[in-house]
Length: 302
Image (cartoon, rainbow, N blue to C red; front, side):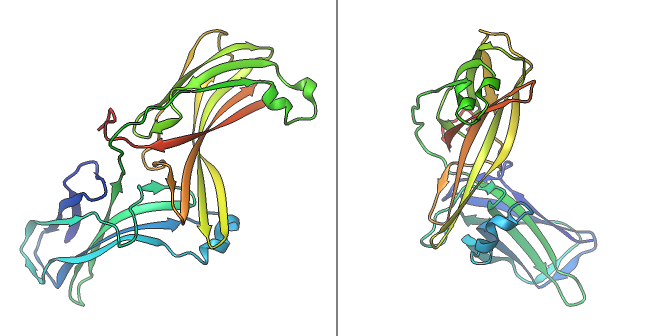
């Protein structure tokens, strides 16, 4: 059976705006095959992703907003002819360039907003043979050349956070946690780090966790809808930590589910972290911190 495969020259499939994407289309045909041409389509788009959770939130905008096309390029890579039995490689290349008046956004797979770039190849054949189509996603990342120097973010968690939100203040646990995040502006390709110390607590602690949250905002006309969803949750401590002992904070940002903080007229993607303290008596204390994600060419990974 004849098959198609798209192979990119970059093994990680990561490209920056203005890069030239190169690779080849591999045709495997054990018995040979006739075709009427092979076409390639490159498309990048920002779309809404409906899910059971989002139907009631985004349904009004979903019926009004069409996908925002960032790239659309279609061209022939092989004219009609015949492949002999065996393996054939057809090279291709195209510039990674947005449509006039638009800018490329970073690849991002969210709950409500998705930015995706696809290469689709189709071999058309006669009416008696079915066309063959294959698709391949590639990743777009936008890098800044110079890394900004940012100050660390200090924080304090104590009973005052809870007392301002509940009526029965006598049942609020008494505790004190002091800590910091190394950066408020974070390189998404490097770990999110920091440290905290439990100074005191009058009740046993069940768990201390770090939660990464994405905030997706969709705009249309005068309407703007914002929704926050959890990306990942990491347990930093299981049980009550020893008072006075520093505990490290270390979290890797998920590759496709995070991106640089993005703001456009049509959509926004931003990020927050929550420090969550869960006590054994089911009391929970949460403090929210806004962080900015960006990407630097001088990252330790690039």
